[in-house]
Length: 363
Image (cartoon, rainbow, N blue to C red; front, top):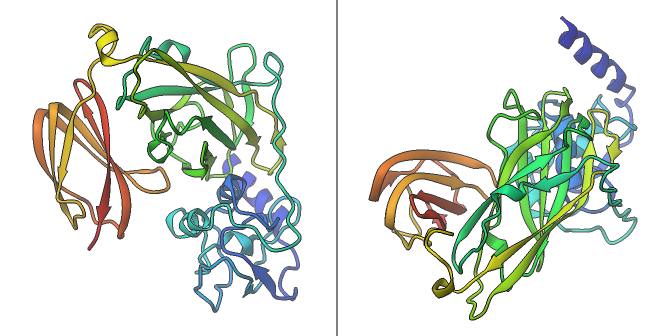
């Protein structure tokens, strides 16, 4: 009953005299209508999730002004929710609206661009967004995939009124393969006790990957602890020991009313050693993987130098769209799920670590 009342109040607050307003000019992906497309737009998809309104006449996803009828709904602050209908079908959901946002990511209008401002949080004062230091290996090797849990808030400074968060990874692309950095927030956690969340990751610059995570049910959460994890693929071919920094910065946390708060970021250092200097007791060797055919339509054969325990298929938005367990097999033939044409990441978990390969699905 309380949840129904909350939704009723939310809808009552957003309903206005949008009908009768002048036709809007929508740029697909620019949900906040500030002239640029980034993870802040993705967070606003979570505010408009499952809402509907008049569909557009044009189905174009190009980053150009497209006429759209106003919806009878507004974001907190007064912006019309028609801007959240990125594909113009009259309904806000994950794949069909996140996809044009993803493909137009980084685009800017020619004029009237209002840059999003990211204010750095203060450690010890603002809630932290940090890596789990205990999970960072002592040493890593070239080609290895390193999985590091991500934590939000702490026992001393919990995160309050969480609905969504945007942040970036910054690192040296000569050492970390930015095209294969992936995040996963699928596991149940204090921000996700009910699987009401969506997320995306996108390479935004030569040395930067942006991440957006947002709930979808208009209920915010407070707490602290692990919320997901990130996988980093080491590509440097080292001769001597090196230290690689990975910085978590440009953080903004949002509540269900669209208000933003500051969060303190974090930095970790990965110690990369040549294989000859790394003890087998420190790190498992990186598995050698072969996948065939590639491109494929619906089947793929995976061969590994180490027994396989599981496989995940990750789409371009960073979502795990399919997974399967294996009983420590060194090869397996997989029937893939029905998926749109495009590039995906095949993540293979083995007894000697995680291997990743880019897979093209072509029906």
